[in-house]
Image (cartoon, rainbow, N blue to C red; front, side):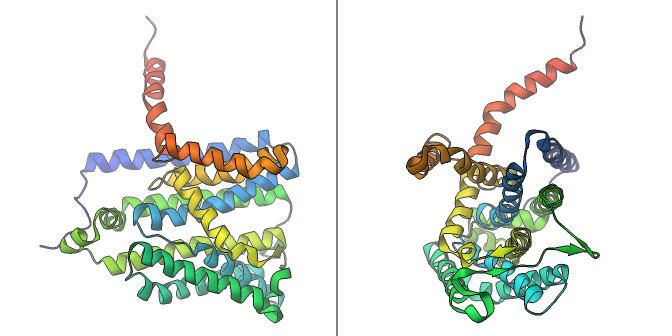
Length: 338
């Protein structure tokens, strides 16, 4: 008898899981709605926008690394291809930016499908090396093909336009990126709760056991690889149009490591952990700039201490620590006075 991607949950467990997803999305939407009250100027809005764009990439990468257990050290390559693809179509060929963004994202999805078929047959450090090689190739091509990409100096990118209106100003971009982040989390949460999501968790536990139970490992790994690449490409294209300029550094190996670090730091197999990891590791360097030459040393120390004392990541550890206290507060609030 074939395995149906995990034991079927009961109706009550489905309802509770759905309620938890809605509460999480509502909390995220509330945080995004209230955050502008603490953003006094355009610089802080810019940091918030970068947090949102990094979080979109990390939500997709977490599906691949955290849930499916497949290591990718080349995701910045997809990010860079989405950015440059949209920039080239809009700047060199006069495409409408929204159309160029969609076309670049679709092209990256096809590329991810093409390269994912052979490399996802690999496992462990062999898979990591293959994705690393892909990322390095993309970075080199973007840096050397200066007639098309502008080379190491980068290239200018036209502003994003929607229905003839230019998306400009930090506040406008903040709400756009915030809405897209909520949509990304919603897609990821629903995917995780689906039979495909249960299959991914089974693959993470043991690919051989999952295969023995009827799960098509190759198909599920390839599909989530493509989905995570789409998240990265779309965020890359948005970053290019927001910044108005793009360089090959966005496709570098260092950027890939930064993205993986955000996922691990926040907590693997935790969608909100990916968002939290992106938020902390994007904003923390801004606070550490006052220490000048010691900035990177302190950032490394914070990351090391977090992994030592919170080995499962920031979000799962905080959830376990604060969960009982929050439940007591809610119970006390519900209790009628005597």
